[in-house]
Amino acid sequence: MTDNREPPRFCREARSQFPALTAGELSGWSLHVTRAHLRRCSDCSAELARQEQLAEALASLRTQPPQPPPGLLEHLLARVDQRSVRSRAAVPARGAISGARPGLSIAFLTVGAAASTGVGYGIWRGVRAVRNRRT
Amino acid sequence: MEVDPALVRACQRGEAGGLDALIRATYADVYALARRMLADPDEAADATQEVFVRVMKSVLGFRGDSTFGTWLHRVTVNVCLTMLRKRSRAREAGLVAGHAPFGLPADESALAARGPQPDELAATADLAARSEAALATLPEDARAVVVLRDIEGLSTKEVAELLGVTETVVKVRLHRAHTRLRALVIGSDDSFGEPA
Image (tube, rainbow over all chains, first blue to last red; front, side):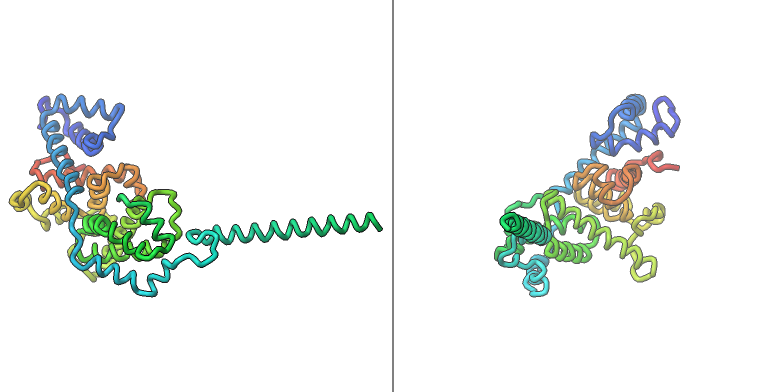
């Protein structure tokens, strides 16, 4: 148990903070209380040492990723070569304003058409007004 | 996952070989993440293929709001979670056996009885190998948290967002998983680790 026979719930609560403590995510009052408990409880201190050992072991797995099975890359590339799949990643249409963003192309064309119509209508109204004044 | 933005741009421009180069550069990382989340090499290969089908469908629309690596990571996790849920449903329907259900509190005692015992794991060559073996014995929801948090190095908040759970749930799952991993990998006798 603990050095000074603290209630087990103190140990349980302290140990529930171990993942955050070893990750450096613990702060404030929780950090203070957990550290204070660790100073008093040798069992929990030993368990924290094991937790740190575990954290190191898990982090080491990052540098030892499982290797893909042989043939997976070839299989993926073969799927890319299938016409049905490649067509989904098709080259942007010739003349598209933004091939990577079809929505943007449609927006540009719509705004352009609306602006042209507006300008044309303005000129027509202007010419008509001038003619009316002359007559 | 680190991905050269030039590869992504080449792919978006439809350059010859762009997609092939992107796949060559990233498939090992995608497979490694899927392999650890699913703990099954065949399912990991299937998940990797599904990820790249989604990449092919979506790469043109990728806008760079996040880095491509972050996006690819998220797609891989989502594909794996979908497969885990399907596996869980199939298991409930009695179609497959041998995997703990995802999203449900696993029966820890049954799992402990089924998985490798500490003395068996101790015989394994080194700590990393023992960790890998012990990781595979965790319930799927707990394994997902450990893989993303401890191996992939995401924060608690990021893991919670990816898995669609609260940060408290992530912390509880992580605490339970660590208690179990410490017992299996290092042989601690944590009588306080599991909530009553």
